[in-house]
Length: 589
Image (tube, rainbow, N blue to C red; front, side, top):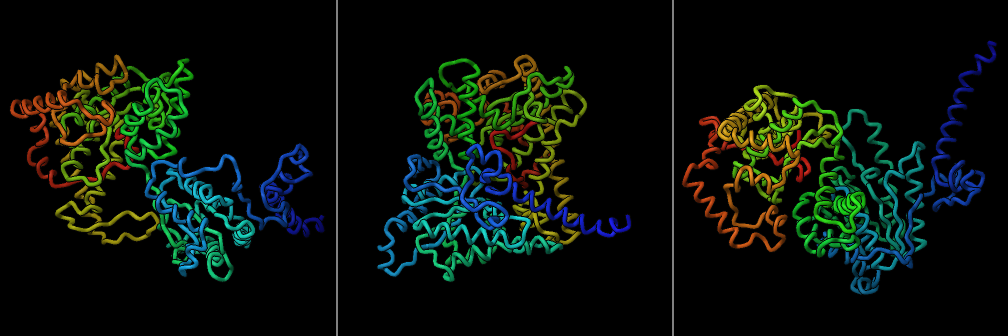
């Protein structure tokens, strides 16, 4: 017995080592029990692995997804929409690969790589595939996370194997998605272990792109949404020579992307009728979001048993993408439903009668997603710059739900938690980032996720906290004043919501009248209702006359902005950051 106990630690060590190696091999393509192993069940049934040798000794092989240059379904620039500037910049690489001699004769060096920077879903991978398709060269794709392994040295070996495969097929294009997974620079961590491990992989990639190993005819494209954390050594000229921005598309880009995806659907009206309106209806959407909307709309139409997709189906799909799955069967007590109706009516009415609040599109008390019991949906105009007045009005609109609970019901609930979280973030940004507070001054302290120490003193932090509290209190008093002035409208809208559950822009206008503000430029709400042709001249003239009459008469719209007297006018000097939420769904319960 004593002999067994003596060897027990050794047996446990070897047993654990065997388990770890077995698990690693099963997870590897071609590993023991994996799809490429002929001894596995899948292998016997004909399942094939990807490139790279299997088994434990093949761990250093890169698992590459490749597209042959002669593939029939290869992607071209015609398949990429909504990022014209990025396409123009990357077309130069196509010319490099097609006509390298033209540049060599002039003594020019072919750029070795380009970094595609942009949020997820904006088409970085698609753009890289299109580059290979246009150039007619092989395309080798791999994710940065595939280089991360538990065994030291496996990641660098896979980097070298990837470049070896590319050189054997040169000219070719390598695309490394999520390069930030392996290309992180040194991070300000008190525990240095992860920082050292993260820097293990950029060095082989940098060496492969340098002159130590020839990369003639191989162009490296990489995608990331965190360029700020990449190792500076990886970014110097001679490695990634170009940085190409692939941002979320503007309204023109969204129109182009919708045309690509709508061409595959059976539509009730002309394609242009939908693309113009849907582009206006989806500010902030990426190309992947737009593809999802089109697919969801087709699914909604199929469930409805109709023969073509209409605007109703697209709007239902957008609601699904923004707010989550509709949950009409969710059990809500009559009292809670009444509270939600007043809350959302408060958001809608406050936004309607504040000049610089974003235009209202829809109000709903249908539960969606995991938490939202209702929402007021706005349609932003994608302004690049915002004034203090615009920022203040948008904060007041976010506080409209809590104000409606206090004025109309006489008690407050937890339903405003999400609104208060956004308002707090906006207030801190206005005071400590945008330099819009006289007491704190013209300073900017952007939040840094990986910073341990704040770049200001405890006294300054206390001052910022005080100004944030004062700003929010002033905005809330301004909102309460407007709520008491417009409580009849809030009551009417709440009762309509309890009956109909969803009120669109036309129903809201029927309850509140035309919005008492006009704009000299076309807004997204106009494009949504009338297409790119805009508002008919007769309707625009009538709206302007009605607004002028309202301003010279009761002045309800203008006077409501004064809000809470001295407190409100003081806060006119302050502003807040635009809500960092999906722009189609500005506030929700």
